Image (cartoon, rainbow, N blue to C red):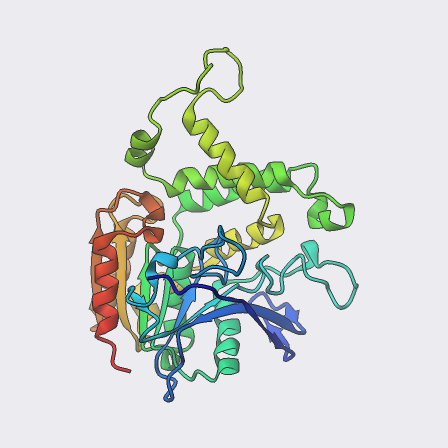
Length: 371
C-alpha cells in the first residue's frame, strides 16, 4: 500500500561544515521527507540513503502530480518492507545534490552567484556527517537502521563506522567496499563526456544561461548500460529494429538505441551536470580500508551495528563477490551479519525493483528489530 501524498521539508544548518577535502561550507540546507510517525522513544527511525541519481523523494506522490511516484515507493509504506506503520522513515537529498539541498546550483553567499565549479568535492564521509546533523535536527539520537542501495549502501556502511553508536542496523544493498578500476574507468568516461561538452564552461554554465546537455546525456547513456544485465537487455530489446530501419545511416535503427537516447534525454532534463561530477567522484573516493593498508576487516572493526548485506546475481557492476568481501570481513571480526543473494534479472537496478525474494529478506530482517 502506498503512503499517498507527501511533501518535502527543508532544514537549514548555520554551523560551518568542514569537509574531508579541507574545504569549509559556512552553512548549508538539506531537503528531506519523512514517512510514518516517530515514536515517543525516538527508537524507530530509519534513514534511507540515495544512490547517484536519487534524492529525498523516496516514496509517495506530490499533490497534483500523478507521475511523481518516489524512486523507492515499492519498498516504503504500510505493510511494505520499510513498514511506515512501524517505522519513521527519512529520505534526504545529499549535500551537493540538485534537488533542493545546497549544491553547485545554489547561490554562493560570498559571490552572490551560483557555486558552479567552486562548489567543493564532497565524499561519502561528508554526507554522513551532514546526515548526522539532520538526525540531531529531528531529535534522533540513533537510527534503528540506515538503508541504501549502490552508493546509498556505501553510506549505510559508512554510518556504522563514522557514528557506530548512532546506528543499530546497517542494510547494505547492491554495494561494494570500494570501486574496482573498471568502475572508476566508467565514471571517468562519463565525466569526460560532461567536461568536454562546449556548453560546460568550466562548470560555470549557469552564468551563460546554458547546460551541458549533450555531455550529461552521454554520461547517463553509458551509466545506464552498466545498470542493466546482458540477459535483461537481450530479453527486452534483443536486436529488434525500429520500423523503417535499414537506412544505412547513423540515425536510430535499433530499439536499444532508442531506449538509451530516451533515458539520456530524460535524465539530462532533470539532473545537474556539476552534481553528476561530484556524485561519481564520491563513488571513486570511497574506500574505508584505505587507511588500514587495505585491510577491510580492520576498517570495519569499529562498527557496532548488525548488518544485512544483499547482492544480486545479475549485477556485474557491483557483483555478489564484492558484497561477500564485506561479509567475510565482518565474519572474521565476529560481527553480526546476515547475507542474501537474489537472482533478480535486472542487473544493478535490481535493488530498485519489487523482487519478492529480496523484499521478503528485508521484511524478515527488519521485523526482528526491537524498538
